[in-house]
Image (cartoon, rainbow over all chains, first blue to last red; front, side, top):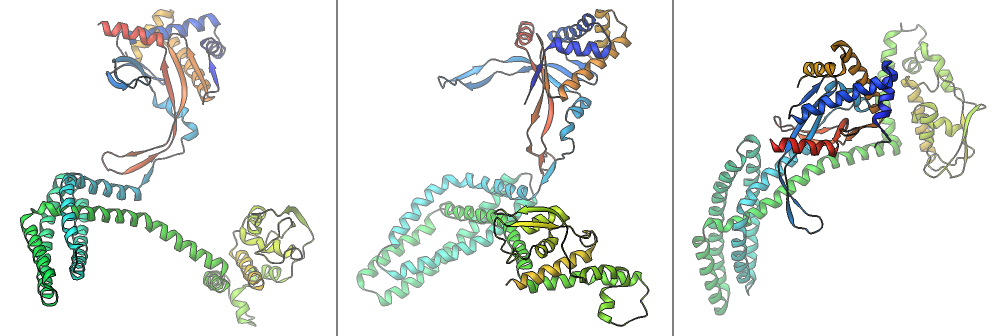
Length: 429
Length: 96
């Protein structure tokens, strides 16, 4: 980012000019300063200069590195370097261009990431057990893949029950780490052990029940051969839940757990996205569906009449009540302005429509608010078939408007513009 | 070495009074700053180079509150010592 390098001589020239010194004396002075700093540094001392900064010799520890050419690990020897910490004043002056920036807190990302870290820790602890369990599950599945359909059905049931149970437990687990952040790992792992014990014991009992049901059902309805097999299978599975320590079931638990945390994380990401979509949808509805827009506008406009009414003594002539309510005397001239058909004779600019051009954007540029596009449309009606479809290449004239008509700060002007835009948009449909 | 000692030393070397030395040093620093803010680096032979560097924005975690903060980019004065000085320094200090 450096454009120019200033040599010491150039610097000394500038300095001599500024300080009204001969070049020679200026040079001596600067060189002496540098010399004094250098001397002190060579003695191992730090040097502090007011309004400038601190020079300090720093010891860099020997460190490992990799030789880029050979790819071998080498050890870089420790060395001294000169550190320079600029003075606060100096720093502030130098940082002028960025001084308006401030640190921003990142809250949403923070909480979700934290959760990620917390939940990943216990996973590592149990990852070893995961392999063990995988093999056991595979065994069981290979058995259940055999003839009887009902067995596999019951298996499915079991599987369904386990996840839902786990989810409850998991939500509990999820809440707990947030409360005590300090010794998360220890506490969590302990809690996990407890939870898992509970879950597995429940699972085991459920499995047993299911199996018993199977046994009865199958024995009644099935052939001898299948019965034989079933008995075998039952014996196996019975002995397994009891014989296998609870650890064996942990991994499956852990997989589920992992999945769930991922879901949680995604849900965090999705919340703002969904909100944005909803807002976008509402906005689109507002702009493209005239009835909605009318309704909203009506609601918004209710405020202004009330305010103006209060500020004015209610006039004696109550000829037209509606007229009265909406347009108090003071702004009546404006109303007249609104009601008189606008004749566009003067123009301030011409624009050619390119792809991507929008009347609203032009209005924003020329009049200060996008709502006033209607007036541009009015002035160019002969060329624009529909406000939503302006042919590319059309030469648009930007009319000169009465400044009262396009007063951005006046809500009535905006109102009028919106009214007109509703009118034109509905006409074009 | 603090500022007082520093001025003392420079003044004896240059045969100026302390006040004069301080004044001159101040102007020197001002000229120095002017040049730096114009994005020019200043090299002093046998000593090192001062230049303006931009530190990119980065995310930090506040150690006490555990809040994540986005730090804005900033400009700092960076000093790179010349190799001559570095060697001198290493020879001197390592031999001690």
